[in-house]
Length: 602
Image (cartoon, rainbow, N blue to C red; front, top):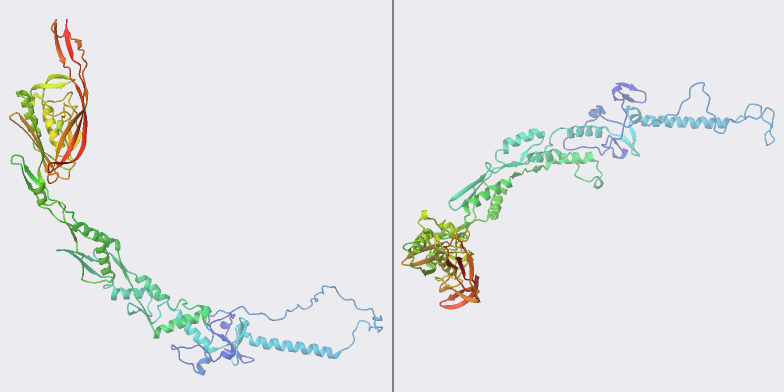
C-alpha cells in the first residue's frame, strides 16, 4: 500500500467504480454514530477499523466526470455562431469620438486579476470536490479523512463500521440454508439445507406422521381403515419451502417502514434466533378410497326384507307350507362416511366407529300367508254322456292341473295342453268349426277352457285373451264361455296379484271343476258373473241350399242349423258378506245368427 499526497492510500485492485449502496456504506454525516449492529457482532476496536476496506464484490455507480474539456495544442478556438468580430482599422475613431490604438487594447490590470482569482477559486473548488468525490469517481479511498459521495440527491459519508456490518450481514443472508430459529413439527431445521431438513424430518417423524387406524364395527363384523387400504401423504415439501423462504421475502410493506428491503429481511432473520417460528406439516388421505370402502361395507350389511313365501302346495290335500319372513337391514352410508372421516382427520389410532343399522320389517309374514291363502274361486260344469268327449276333458284337466303362476306370469291354455293328438290319447268328438258341428280329435275341450274362465274371472285375475263360441254353449251361460282351437284360438289369463296362484283342474263323474288357490280377495269378499242379452238377432227364414256332388245322388243334408244371434254383456259383481257393493263390465260377446243351410245332390 502506497501513501499518496494528501493523506490517502489505495490498492490497484480497489480501483472500482462506486454506485448507489442503499445498505449503508455511505451515510449522512449526522448519522455516522448510527451504524448497523446486532446481537451477532461485537464492536470493533480502532485498530480493527483501520483494517476494514471495501471488498471486491461491491458494485459502484459510474463516476461523474466533472473535468473541463481540453483542446489540443495548436488548434483554433471555436468560431462564435454569429461569426468573427472585425477589429477597427488603425487610426480610426469609434463612435464616442475617441481614437483606437491600432491592433492593441486598452490596458485594464484589475480585470486580469479578477479573472485569475475566479479561475483559481474554481480550480480550488474543483480540487476540493475531486478530493471529496474521489471514492465515487475513481474508487480511491482517503485514509485520514472522510470519503463522500452524492447518492440519490444526498451527500453521504462512507462509514467503515457500517460497511463491515453490512458485509457480515450480507454473508449471513447469502447462506444457502434455512435460517436458525425455524422449526418444523417441533424439530429445529435452522442451518440445514432443504434436502438436509427433508432427510432429518423423514428419519424422526416419517414413521409416525400420517399413521391412523380406525375400525368400523357393525354387529359382529368389523372392517379396518389404515395405511394399507387408505393411501396418505404429508405436505413436507411445501412446508420446507416456506421454512426456506422466511427471511428471504419481505413480509412488511416498504411504504410502512423507513427500512430498506434488505434491512427488513435481516431483521426477520435475526428475530428468528430469539422468537423462533414453528411450522407444522399436515397429512392428507384419499377420500375416494374411504368412500369406496364405506360403500362396500354398506353393500355387505344392507339387505332387503324377505317376505314369507309359499314353499309347497299339496294339490291332493289342498294344503300349503310357508317359509318364514326375514327382516331387512339398511345402513346410512353417508353417516358412516362422515364418522370415519372425522376419526381420520384427527389421525386417531385404534379408534372404533359404528353406525346402528335400521331394521325394516317385511310386508308379508308367515302368519299372514297362512291366514290369507285359500281357495279364491271355483267353478264346476256338467259334461255330456259322450265318453270320447269326456276322455278329452279328463286329459286336458290332467295336463293343466297343478299349474302355478308367479306374480306377473301368464297362463296359456294351448301351451299348457299342447296340440291335442291321438298320440296323447285324445279322441274324436263333436266340435264346432266354421259354424258347423263336426267330429274332431280333442273335441269337447272347450268345456275345460270355459270352466277355467269362469273360475279365473271370479278370482279377479286379468283376462288376456278370450273368444266366444260360434253360438252359445249349453254348459255355461251366454257370454261366459271361452273357446279354443289349435293353434289359432287360445285362452290366456295373467296373475296380476302379488302372490303365487295355483290352478287345480279335475274331472269326475261327468263333472269338470276348476279351482283357483291364492291370496283371498278379502274377508267376506267374493265375485260372481252376471250376463245380460242386450240384443237378439233372428236368422233368415229362407233355407240356403248348397249343391254338393259328393253326396249320394238324390240326397240332401242339413249342414247349418238356423240359429238366433245374440249380443251379451257380462258383468263382474262384487259382494261383501253376500251384499253387492260393486259392479263392473267384464266384456261383450257377440253370437252371430246363422241361416239354415242344406246341401243336396239331385
